[in-house]
Structure formats: C-alpha cells, structure tokens
Image (tube, rainbow, N blue to C red; front, side):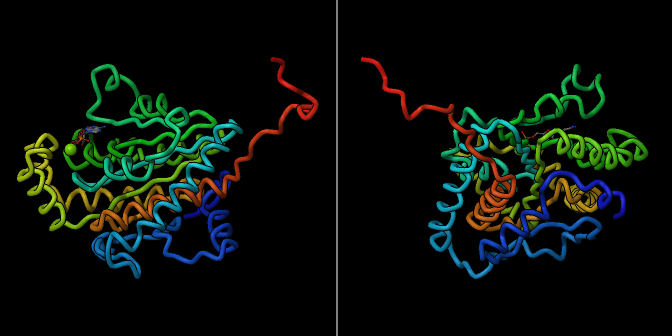
Length: 293
Ligand code: AMP
Ligand code: MG
C-alpha cells in the first residue's frame, strides 16, 4: 500500500526487526505487513511454536515481563516517548487476561488502561475519535486500550450503526490519527487476539459453569456470537486497511492463553527496546555531594 509506505513514521516495525535480529532472537512476529491481506480463517489460533504447555513458557514470559519493566522505567524517566497498545478481540478473546498477565509488575504510575464501551451521549455527540484521543498516553507513559477506535469499524459495521460510507471512510481517518500520534512521539501497536469459534464456546461455557466467573457472562455475548462470521470479515478488513509501518497490527494466536501472553509480552518488549529509551543524565557534580545530617 503506497499510502502507508509513504508515511514512514517513527521507528516501529522496521527497527523492531533489526533489533530482534541483532539480539540473535528468532521467533514468529505474527505481524501484518502493510499491504498484506490477512485471511483470519487461514491463521491457526491453536499454534504455539515448539511450546506444548504453559510450563514451557513460564520462564520466558517472566524474562519478557522483566524486559518490559526495565524498559518502562527508562521510558518513564526519559519522558520523551509514549506507547499506545491497542487490544482487540472477539468476546472472551483474552483482552483482560493479557492486561492481567503481561502488565503485572509494570509501574502503575507510568501506565493507564482505558476500556471503551458503547459511547455515552456526550461522546456520541463528538467525532468518533474524540474520546480515544483524550485517552492516548502522554510522553513517558504506556496507554492500553481495552477495545478502541477500531470498534467504530467493527461493532458499528456489523450492527449497521452508521451507513457503510461513514465506517469505510474511517480506515483512512484511523491511519491519519495513528500517524499523527507517532509523529507526536507516541508509538502505536495493535493486537488482535485470535481465538476460534469453538474456543469461544468453551470459554463461554466455562463462564457459565463457574460461579466465580459468572459475573463475566453476558447474554449479549450469545447474541454477538451469532454474528461471528460478520465480525471476522470486519476484523479482516480493519486489519488489512490499517496495518502500517508506523502502527502495525499483530494477529496473535490466542487459543492457548499462555502462548498469547508470551507473544504479546515479547512484542511489547521488542517495541520498547526499539524505542531505545534512556535514563536522563544526572546533574553534573553529584559525586561531590554529601547529604547533611
Ligand atoms: P465489554 O468489553 O465486554 O464490557 O463490552 C463492551 C461493549 O461495548 C461491547 O459489546 C462493544 O461492542 C461495545 N462497544 C465498544 N465500543 C463501541 C462503539 N464505539 N460503538 C458501539 N458499541 C461499542
Ligand atoms: Mg464482554
């Protein structure tokens, strides 16, 4: 896609690849290249590389969490670059699980989660990006969007909440919005947590069966499940129209929760590493200072 290629924003996907290869690491990125046409039906939601069970990734996940913590401390101190992480998925896809398992240990002072539901009347009276723009992270901060501006080309499309010409124009508006964030020092990465329809059934059943999980169950999830195929098409179109060099999408195989967590954690760590945040220099002359009694 020429348009995407032309707008070469701050270091994102490209420098990430470089950083990973200089690290000597070699693992599937699950990233969507600009112009690539992902077909979700062809992406195996069960895959997990050579790992067979949760135990196999526990140590590696901890390594990735520590990388994130260390890099976040630098990012916060440096106060020059922000990172917006977008999480999207079908219901039960694991957005909350990722937030819980990948960000445990991140300094809450430098991090904020924003969850988006159907817009309230005030939000609905503004342009669709207004409420998201208000919640993007500042420099030095990480912002996590639990659902995001992508709902305005997903649920809005599937449920016919606005005419096609309105939601279709939003792909370009979203690209421009994300481009302007990256130019303003805020990197953007986007995760689609990819589960299968069978896996969603299992997860909904387990929410029903477990009294401690029942609060998460919404009869609305069953209604939405009936639109599974429409949502898959909407996700495909959204991802294929908005995966750019400056704001890449990652399609994360997410039937295995532990593999999903690993992929998200190491992608975030690689992204932060490519941003290369540095502690600011100390004031000169500190070595001569002694603290008075
Ligand atoms: P949950 O994340 O399970 O609490 O559900 C939030 C609900 O809000 C989902 O059904 C979303 O589809 C819906 N939602 C989020 N953003 C929008 C939006 N922009 N327009 C309409 N519905 C939305
Ligand atoms: Mg829900």
